[in-house]
Length: 98
Image (cartoon, rainbow, N blue to C red; front, top):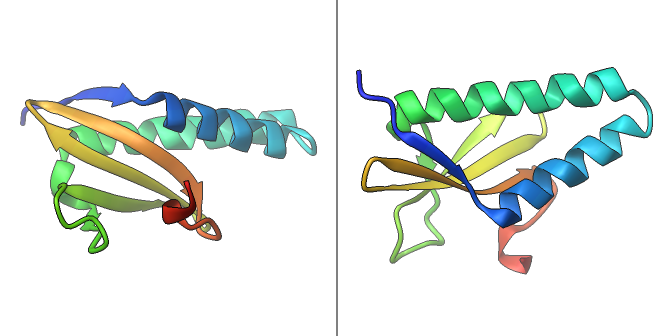
C-alpha cells in the first residue's frame, strides 16, 4: 500500500492550535492526547485516502471529510500523491463561514 505525503495547510495548523488551546485550558495532557488522535487520523487518511465522505458542497474539488472522535472532523483533498489537510473543525462549525 502506497502512503501519501501529508501536507497540513496553515488554516488546518491554526485549527489544531485552537483546539489544543481550548482543551488545554482544562487539561494539557488531554490536549496532547487529542492532537495525537488527529495525527493518527492524518496517517490513516494518507494510507486510505478514500476513507472520507465527499463534501457535496464542493462541486469543483475533490474535498472529503472524515470524522475524528465525537465532535471533530478533518476536511481534506488529495492531489499528486499528497493529501492536503485543509481544515480541522468541530462538528459545530460550518466550513462555509471560513
